[in-house]
Image (tube, rainbow, N blue to C red):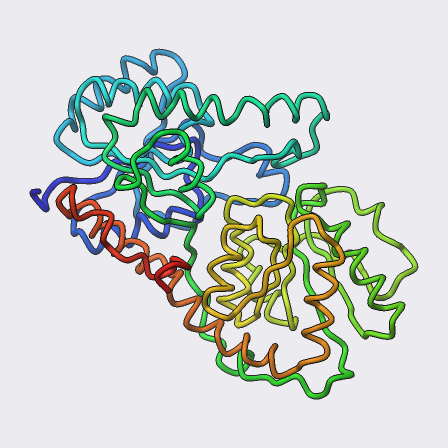
Length: 390
């Protein structure tokens, strides 16, 4: 492979979740990275407080709505010998058609893809029950169709979480084309003092933070149930809730669970650093970038076992998992942390190496190694954050 080949990415919108990795990829490969996007920003996420990416070094080129197929054809022909990466392509029909063109033209292309949700809960907002159930039933079939369309042509899939790898294998994609991946954001600043703070005593209040949409998928109701049960047994636990949505389901007169509004964009690590523990009790989360934010801030995590990033934290010892949808399982994990302050201190210490493994520079180096390796050796390259190889 000629190292002078440039990288072109195609996605619905470029966010910090991937932009910092692309920036690092460009620096390490010493070639440009160009991002083709169907929109400058996601309208729904914008209403929830998201802002455009902070990364300006990656050139963004809008994919037009009118005449998009001929536009994509021209771009793919112009950069036919370069490397193309399609991120979250199944969200946009335009990108699916563009991938078909890439396969037809024989360009080298990869996917970056989350797993599909196996349940009926809405992803960014609540959805009707029948529509959610129908989508959940159809998703495995749809992905099998994608595997048939693209499996033989694509160079590989950077699969976000172990669930994505399992789903693509079941859909028919060869395991040698599946590479563990995730979302990667930089640590705002080192926080050795926060990471070293001990829990003073077993009866100290455990300060928990929840950050996420106030929708059923995120599992806030499970956290409420667990904390209420433990409080009734004399455990001292407080929960501060941040996120967009309707907070009316939260008890207005309970000082132990308080709604704190939205975190200003870009300040999540600073806010999370004030707490002992982040809890992400999602019924499904392909990754869960707030886990990255917590680990970068030196704060350990508790996640459901349906959360992609939670598995990484657990493998490094900076997180604990509970059974998805099970408030009693979550309650047991929280009680264990209150009863054993040494465990929480050990988890805090482990946040630093976990966060280091999840830095964009690390992800870019791994991605570059996979892309440059011969096809037979790609799957042997170690992912530094992968639970199986951590």
